Image (tube, rainbow, N blue to C red; front, side):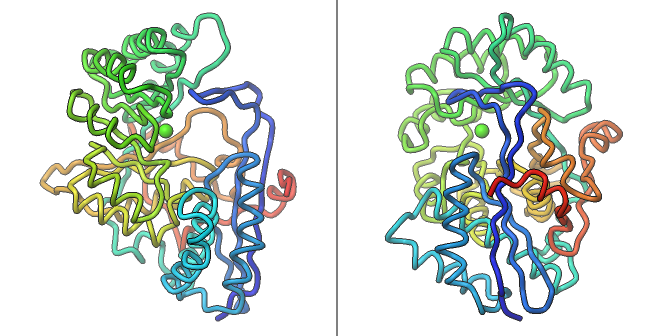
Length: 386
Ligand code: CA
């Protein structure tokens, strides 16, 4: 079997409502899918992290840099292909867009491997470790409205009502306002429910301590990306000084980046992004590193149904750490804001919201073979911008 073509599909649509996080407001949703075709009519799908113009740049890397490196090669030689591509790009980018581009290609190769084996990805990976995945629903995005705290309180209550196992909010309007927003979310969900706080690295270490101490008092479940991803010493100081778990890692890449992050004892909870850090081949190494450092893992999840399904398989197969009769369980991250690329792209939708509602907070394992998801060609034609 040989690879005959690698195609990027960049999709975009305008949101009904502008949403924000600590770095920007955005009015459109984008997705970047990678399709790998073979001479035996087996096609694999992957996804690259990176919104908007980043997706357009990554498309060029996928099609102009990576495709020539893999044409004619056996798609099952995933490790050989990964290292060949990485070695050829190393001098030009050991993090960021080249690795995001490689991620989508690698995920598509795993999809092909699952289809060739006739197995769902989680079985190819040696799972399942668990039969169901708890799901947390994030929302509480920043919006330009007068009473954001009131809106956060109501939205947090609504997410709990939808059945999700936990929730997560954004902050980023300055420490004083952010503490008020967190108080509103605690009020909305009540005293006995887990909520996490995502800063998208907007604070100085001093401000992160101010917000973090308030989160300690509110009993927040984790404090995500409090400071810049490069500031590993800041992470370690926060982790040592706060009760709330410090999490992060969605902006870290490859085993080498993760090794340094973990050795700095920067994280109480690791959030690797498989569509950015180097794909499934590299994700497995990163999870092994996290487990070697006894840091639990809850995957960062963003993007279309392809990314969501990929993460469902990975979470289903993830070994218990540390294990027990009632082991610590990872959760599936789920964006509760409207996302047509997740909900409308597949002929057979994942239907996560319905499952969460019916089960009280969890989803069953995805099907197969491979990722078990095939984007509808007509849907891709409708939303493709490149
Ligand atoms: Ca985040």
